[in-house]
Length: 242
Length: 398
Ligand SMILES: Nc1ncnc2c1ncn2[C@@H]1O[C@H](COP(=O)(O)OP(=O)(O)OP(=O)(O)O)[C@@H](O)[C@H]1O
Ligand SMILES: [Mg+2]
Image (cartoon, rainbow over all chains, first blue to last red; front, side, top):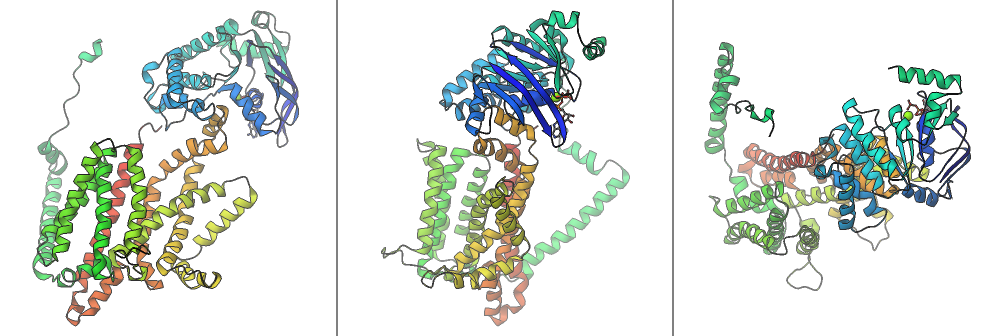
């Protein structure tokens, strides 16, 4: 589904991604963790070309990411993304947020797009908020709207960049529940998160990032029970200790 | 429903008496201040009212109303201006029903203004009185039409677009129609001219300003350079100079048979001037949009144009409404500079009226006050509309 081969990226002189190689199969759920600044966000943002990589190749659903704008647009239609800061459109209602892309990108009639948007809001558990504005919702509700908005394009792949780190603890669960349900439904997912409970339960594979590359990857059971690298062990001890 | 709903809400906000007690009479020095202020207000308003109703002589204004309203517009054609206003009143009535809110306030203001003309206590021709009666009627007719199946935003918008053509035809004339002979724009004057200069400037400078602002932030170097140069050059030159250039220099560049008339040239100058400032205001709004908004738009697959039109501009413009309206108001006042290219807008009419009669030379205070009041009414309407617009659009702000 996604093939990354030897992906390099620089911000000016700063070498952020140093030859990342990773293959993700259909319906796989990958959790990426690692210390701050290790390039996790940058990596998943290269997959829908919010960041451009300078070397190596990324192939998403058979389409290679290149400078060709048509390829980029085609890939963005197949890949949904959920951000740490939600990034909902504050001037549109919740329903309009979700229905916007189907109307303008998929060219669906408004009525159909809004009907589907309504169903998605039901799926993420907030149908009653459809006509409010994002600013009137709690963080957890906003993030669920953001998930619905990404799902509205019927993507084959979903990217999550620390979807719960901007949330108060009591709202984290409601978002993770939605993500778990999504994982069970067979969505291909790449999730950057430090929620190890979620990783243990929902992930097929955990990849540990450090200094711009994958240090090790394994099934959750193996990853937590027998980390191979010292750096992984150190990271795990830090993150699980609190 | 739950236990908390049983708790009473706090007592209702205090009534007028309580407000006065709390804000004006709470302490002894507050009482004193209130007293002093009351005495001051009393004497000032007594003085003003006395002057307005007894000392002042308003003859220069009451006997030159036509001049103030339309300048040298041919007297036998003035009905066309009146008709244009009636047309606008009709659409305000219609829009009142369709959109409500502030539009309704303006429709009412038009109706009341018309009614006031109908009963003004000085000499007016029966035609003007008739117009005064017709104006509120047309607002009402518009409102009633708005209740039929024509009362849709779509039709109202179409109506406004058509009314633009209609008013233009009425004011300038249509070739080959004997009852609408051509009226040279040089004959436009007074409030009519002031109003048209401002209106055209406002309506045209806004889209140009948006495009310039977007262009200045574009990634295409040539476009960016052009927009930046345009904005910086225009902002570096006084409006008077620009008006002068348009009126004197433009004709030198154009082929001889292309004649752009004086009013149009002034309109173009004012539009470009306002557009440059508008662009900078709007650019401020564009810069305030967090990059996450653009990323989110890209991530759901919107292309560049869609991102700009659907996500960036609506948020950016909303942020700069106060600045934009401030500029509209400035533009309205700047119409007085059109005198530099020989146009006789409201202020110049005032000067001409004062000088037209030796006995009126002493009455300049009355004339300028009147003109000031007219300007104030329009600019206040604009800032009122802006505040209401902000409130309406403020819903859902973060
Ligand atoms: N636009 C940019 N320009 C320059 N440097 C950047 C840019 N974006 C990120 N970086 C740098 O790249 C490095 C990796 O950033 P990235 O956001 O991918 O880290 P991360 O692993 O997601 O960290 P975190 O857990 O804090 O989100 C950081 O050192 C960051 O300072
Ligand atoms: Mg990050």
